[in-house]
Length: 514
Image (cartoon, rainbow, N blue to C red):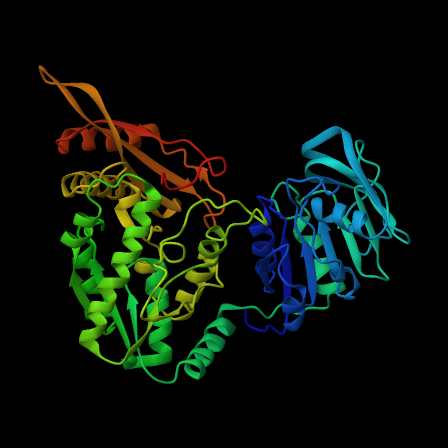
C-alpha cells in the first residue's frame, strides 16, 4: 500500500457490495482502498486515511465468531461510516445493542430523515433506500442521535458528530439508493474534508515517477496480449522505462482468431513498442492435455507462462522484473475473505502464479478498476481500437473450452467466437456490450443436417453489460441477430450443431463460465 494524501480506507466484512463502495468513492475523484476487517489497524493508520468505512456483511454482530475489527479503531478520531453490518458494529462495540429483526428487510424502503443530520444533509424528508438486512440496532450507543427510520426499523440511521461516527442501515453504494452519492459526498467532502484530486492524469504522473525511482536498473519484460490491461500497462511502463521495457507476446495456443497477427501489426508496427513474438502454443496445449479442472488449468497456465517468460528473458539479459496488467478486482477476488469475501476464482495474474519465480513483479495497474484503466489509456493516447476491445481472460480460451482442451476444440471455439464478434460489429452492437464471447461446452447433442443425424458440440454465447466486471447483466440482443449468429455458427462450423444463449446475471453467476 502506498501512502495517499487524500484517501478513504474500507474494511470489508464480507458484503457483496464492498467493491461498489470503493468504486463510488473513486467516482468522486477520491482514492479508496479495501482491506480485510482484521487487517492491522496500525498499518492502515500509518498511511493516514482521512476516513474509514465499515462495509456490510452476512453475519450477525452478536453471534459467536462474528467478524470484528480491532477495538482501537473506534478511538482513532478518524471519521467513520458504518454501512448495514458496519452500523451494527459501531452500535455493538461502542455501548449500543443489536438484535434480530422480526421482519427482514430486502429491497426498497422509505427512509424518514431528521433534517439535523450531518451525513444526510440536503436529502428530502423521505428518500428511497435499498435495504438488505435481518438484524437491527435496538439501542444506540451513548450520545448518538437517531437521524433516520423506516416503518420496519426504529433506527435506520444514527450519528455522533462530535466523535465523527455515522451509521446507516441501508446501502448507499447501490444504484437502487438514488441519493447514495450525495451521502458519500457529505461524508467524504464535508465530514472528512477531502478534495477531489484522484484523477487519471495524476495517476499517470505519480506512477511514472514512482516506477523510475523504485526500479532504476535492470530490464523489464511484460506479457502483451493486445487486450486493454496489458496494452495500457505496456504504454505506461514504456513512458517510465523506454528501451528497458521488452514487451513479449506469448502465443499460448489459446488466443482468439488471428490475434497473433493483429497484435504484432498494431503494437510493433504502429505503436512502436519493443515487441518480441514467441510461439509456445504446442507446449501449453501439451501441458493441458487431459486437464478438466478450471483451477488446475489456471495454475498450469500461470506456471508455463512464467517459465516461457524466463526463457525469453535469458535471451535479453539483465532482466530483473516481470510486469503484468493485474487490476484491482483481480487482487480482491483472489484473496480469501471469510474475512472477507469468499474466493470466487484464482486469477491468472495473481493466484495462478507459481510459488517460486526468478523475476520480481511490477503491477502498475493493480490499484485500478477496468474503467479507470481505459481512462489511463486515453490519457496516454492509446487509440480507441485498442481501448474499446472487450475484456479477455488471462488464461485465454482455456476457461471457455470447458472440459478437456485440445487444438481441435480450441479451433472450433475460435471460429465460433469470430463469427459472433463479427456479427456484433456489423450490426453496431459490439460497442454497446461490455463483454461478449462464445463458450464450448463439454456436451454433445443430437441434430439433423440435411438427411443426416449429427451428434456434435454445443456452443453457448454470452454477452453482458457491466462497468467494471464486479456485477453484470445479460444483454437482450435482438432475436434476429441471435438467429443469424446461431445459423452461421451451425452452418459454417463442422463440429457444432447447437447454440444456446446464457441469460444469467452476475451475481448469482460469474461472467466467465470457469
